[in-house]
Amino acid sequence: MKILSLVDGSACSAKAIEYIASHLDCFQGKDGLHLLHIHLPVPGGLARSIVGTDAINNYYAEESKAAIEPSEKILRDRGIHYQATYAVGDIAEQVQSYVTKQNIELIVMGSHGNGGLKSLVMGSAATRVLTMASVPVLIVR
Image (tube, rainbow, N blue to C red):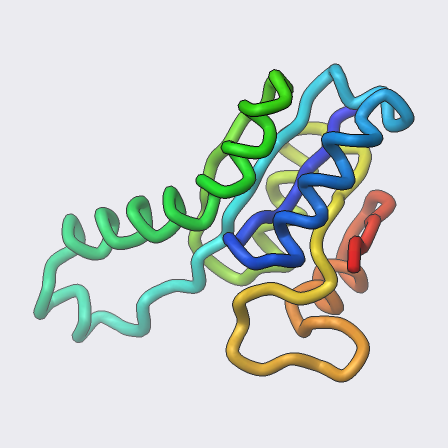
Protein backbone atom coordinates (compact mmCIF):
# COMPACT_ATOMS: atom_id res chain seq x y z
CA MET A 1 0.00 0.00 0.00
CA LYS A 2 1.28 3.46 -0.88
CA ILE A 3 0.72 5.89 1.98
CA LEU A 4 0.97 9.67 1.88
CA SER A 5 1.49 11.53 5.13
CA LEU A 6 1.09 15.28 5.15
CA VAL A 7 3.66 16.84 7.46
CA ASP A 8 4.14 20.37 8.74
CA GLY A 9 6.35 20.04 11.81
CA SER A 10 3.41 20.28 14.24
CA ALA A 11 2.78 17.99 17.22
CA CYS A 12 -0.26 16.47 15.47
CA SER A 13 1.84 15.80 12.39
CA ALA A 14 4.41 13.98 14.55
CA LYS A 15 1.62 11.93 16.18
CA ALA A 16 0.43 10.87 12.73
CA ILE A 17 3.96 9.75 11.80
CA GLU A 18 4.31 7.89 15.12
CA TYR A 19 1.01 6.15 14.42
CA ILE A 20 2.09 5.11 10.93
CA ALA A 21 5.49 3.93 12.19
CA SER A 22 3.94 1.76 14.89
CA HIS A 23 1.21 0.33 12.62
CA LEU A 24 3.03 0.09 9.29
CA ASP A 25 2.59 -3.69 9.08
CA CYS A 26 -1.19 -3.31 9.49
CA PHE A 27 -1.25 -0.94 6.51
CA GLN A 28 1.16 -3.10 4.53
CA GLY A 29 2.93 0.19 3.95
CA LYS A 30 6.24 -1.26 2.91
CA ASP A 31 5.42 -0.45 -0.73
CA GLY A 32 5.94 3.21 -0.13
CA LEU A 33 5.61 5.85 2.50
CA HIS A 34 5.58 9.38 1.17
CA LEU A 35 5.99 12.55 3.23
CA LEU A 36 4.65 15.74 1.71
CA HIS A 37 4.84 19.28 3.02
CA ILE A 38 2.75 21.87 1.23
CA HIS A 39 3.74 25.48 1.45
CA LEU A 40 1.23 28.20 0.70
CA PRO A 41 2.51 30.48 -2.07
CA VAL A 42 4.08 33.85 -1.36
CA PRO A 43 1.56 36.44 -2.57
CA GLY A 44 1.81 38.21 -5.87
CA GLY A 45 4.34 39.41 -8.35
CA LEU A 46 5.47 42.37 -6.24
CA ALA A 47 7.17 40.11 -3.70
CA ARG A 48 8.91 38.22 -6.50
CA SER A 49 10.12 41.44 -8.11
CA ILE A 50 11.47 42.76 -4.80
CA VAL A 51 13.28 39.69 -3.43
CA GLY A 52 13.57 37.59 -6.58
CA THR A 53 12.38 34.16 -7.62
CA ASP A 54 15.52 32.39 -6.39
CA ALA A 55 15.12 33.82 -2.89
CA ILE A 56 11.49 32.75 -2.76
CA ASN A 57 12.31 29.25 -4.01
CA ASN A 58 15.08 28.98 -1.38
CA TYR A 59 12.58 30.09 1.26
CA TYR A 60 10.13 27.36 0.21
CA ALA A 61 12.88 24.72 0.29
CA GLU A 62 14.26 25.78 3.69
CA GLU A 63 10.85 26.07 5.36
CA SER A 64 9.75 22.72 3.93
CA LYS A 65 12.95 21.02 5.05
CA ALA A 66 12.38 22.31 8.60
CA ALA A 67 8.76 21.10 8.54
CA ILE A 68 9.67 17.62 7.26
CA GLU A 69 12.72 17.03 9.49
CA PRO A 70 10.87 15.97 12.70
CA SER A 71 8.98 13.29 10.76
CA GLU A 72 12.13 12.13 8.99
CA LYS A 73 13.87 11.71 12.35
CA ILE A 74 11.06 9.49 13.67
CA LEU A 75 11.21 7.29 10.58
CA ARG A 76 15.02 7.16 10.42
CA ASP A 77 15.20 6.17 14.10
CA ARG A 78 12.90 3.22 13.33
CA GLY A 79 14.63 2.26 10.09
CA ILE A 80 11.56 2.96 7.96
CA HIS A 81 12.14 3.84 4.31
CA TYR A 82 10.30 6.88 2.95
CA GLN A 83 10.30 9.53 0.25
CA ALA A 84 9.99 13.20 1.21
CA THR A 85 9.16 16.21 -0.91
CA TYR A 86 7.30 19.48 -0.87
CA ALA A 87 4.90 21.37 -3.07
CA VAL A 88 3.71 24.96 -3.24
CA GLY A 89 0.06 25.87 -3.68
CA ASP A 90 -3.40 25.14 -2.36
CA ILE A 91 -3.17 22.27 0.11
CA ALA A 92 -6.12 20.20 -1.08
CA GLU A 93 -5.27 20.66 -4.77
CA GLN A 94 -1.61 19.74 -4.23
CA VAL A 95 -2.59 16.65 -2.23
CA GLN A 96 -4.98 15.47 -4.93
CA SER A 97 -2.36 16.03 -7.61
CA TYR A 98 0.26 14.08 -5.64
CA VAL A 99 -2.18 11.25 -4.90
CA THR A 100 -2.94 10.90 -8.60
CA LYS A 101 0.67 11.10 -9.81
CA GLN A 102 2.04 8.67 -7.21
CA ASN A 103 -0.94 6.25 -7.10
CA ILE A 104 -1.36 6.85 -3.36
CA GLU A 105 -3.87 4.53 -1.67
CA LEU A 106 -4.17 6.16 1.78
CA ILE A 107 -3.64 9.66 3.17
CA VAL A 108 -2.65 10.00 6.83
CA MET A 109 -2.52 13.38 8.52
CA GLY A 110 -2.80 15.08 11.88
CA SER A 111 -6.09 16.65 12.89
CA HIS A 112 -4.49 20.08 13.36
CA GLY A 113 -1.36 21.60 11.97
CA ASN A 114 0.58 24.82 12.14
CA GLY A 115 -2.16 26.88 10.47
CA GLY A 116 -3.06 30.21 12.02
CA LEU A 117 -6.77 29.55 12.58
CA LYS A 118 -8.17 26.26 13.83
CA SER A 119 -11.66 24.85 13.57
CA LEU A 120 -13.32 23.50 16.69
CA VAL A 121 -13.23 19.86 15.61
CA MET A 122 -10.54 19.66 12.97
CA GLY A 123 -8.08 21.99 11.28
CA SER A 124 -9.17 23.73 8.09
CA ALA A 125 -6.49 22.04 5.95
CA ALA A 126 -7.55 18.60 7.21
CA THR A 127 -11.17 19.45 6.44
CA ARG A 128 -10.34 20.56 2.89
CA VAL A 129 -8.21 17.46 2.21
CA LEU A 130 -10.93 15.22 3.61
CA THR A 131 -13.60 16.70 1.35
CA MET A 132 -11.46 16.61 -1.83
CA ALA A 133 -9.66 13.30 -1.36
CA SER A 134 -10.22 10.50 -3.86
CA VAL A 135 -8.70 7.89 -1.51
CA PRO A 136 -9.33 7.04 2.16
CA VAL A 137 -8.05 9.57 4.70
CA LEU A 138 -6.96 8.70 8.22
CA ILE A 139 -7.00 11.64 10.62
CA VAL A 140 -4.80 11.17 13.70
CA ARG A 141 -5.61 13.27 16.73
